[in-house]
Length: 423
Image (cartoon, rainbow, N blue to C red):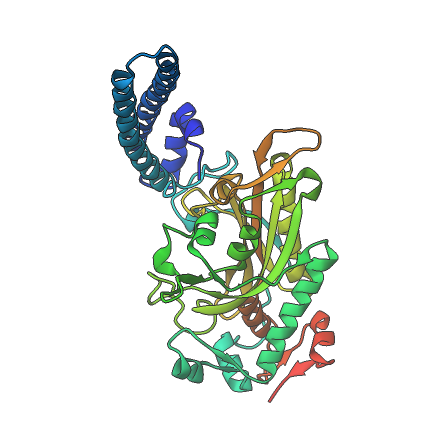
């Protein structure tokens, strides 16, 4: 959430950055609500000051043995006005907060201006895209031939876009999770296993609510939401807290199942694992000081990239343009892995910095050593990586002509030494 004082002081910049996102927002209405709020607050302060003065006057009149009925009437009148204004003030504050909760973050100046993913900019590539000497199969055909994914039974027990992993498929998924967590731990990330069900305040804290409620699975009876990413649980572990400077940066890695209704995505990637309602992911989350957020973002991006490098999977890093950056993010890099069957790169990780946007919503603050002032922290997160998409990238990039799949060397210790998945 943006600071209303910052918005007023930098209105032209905020309007431009919001327009660059192709987002709509009624700034005139926001400013009028803020002006009303400030006017009510000023009136309330005057009335309370008057009430305090009259209260002292009552004491003086009493001491002198005079009639206090008239002064008491003034007190009651002031009290009634204050009560009425308090209601109006609370309503204006609520209305302003609700509006601010729908205003996207301010984009960093380095973000290229563009309309959609077609305007994203290539930052770098790693590895040579693999072109097998035979016709590359899509991952769903490879998995079906090996019997390691069961799409039909997943649908039978749930609905479309749910999949059952079988045999070596389940083992490969588990191997990837452990490999990713171990790799990130080596880079100083503390592992966290947090709840998959969270309350609405946690969803508001990281920006999923109120804007993206249609994309969330909700347990109505318990008023809890299934997390779309461990970012929600892990970031909000520090909500409404004041951290010591020495505790920063907080660096966590967290495995979780993720749940997304994928509202509005009907007809997109209906086959395979690209777009599932439930999928596994290892998330990287940081809480840091403002001056360190850019370097910590770059380190997080490198941490995500090193997983693909160890797996020897070709990829590229894209800088997202203004029209493609997510609601809460100030800047985002996407990592896209090469898929031979489609001869395209597909997203496998998004790494973002949020400035103090999430920290303001979740009230995550810190105090510098020797100072009384309390500041909002900065938050950063990214996938390290989406496990299902890494799984399918391995199937496609390590497929063999006979339908088998070679296990990447770094995963073999997690697969009891297995070198090839075959029928």
